[in-house]
Length: 145
Image (cartoon, rainbow, N blue to C red; front, side, top):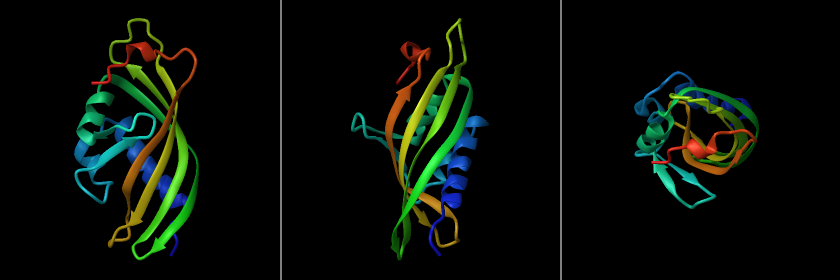
């Protein structure tokens, strides 16, 4: 059975829920087929571990994430894999706001996903294709490491 857009967005929502509700690295790691998982950034060519990703996101008191549209292209039947390309809106409020506006950003995503033996969809490869910060975002206050 081909991997559907609905399955991909459900997996994306599970990821987003870990950021919305203070999830753990282990919860995020469980969404990946291969461990240790990494997130790759096309803009810089760098990659980060999920521990680094977690540390980065802990500077925020609250995060709002909203998945945008995704398109899915089947890649193979055995293993059952698909490529999903889309975006999401990310808004992050600093733990110590000090008059700073939140970050507002469109994040481009390019994922390879695979149906695991138990039927569950997992990330095989996660590539951030862009971070487009919207006007009035407090980008200058970001702590990258």
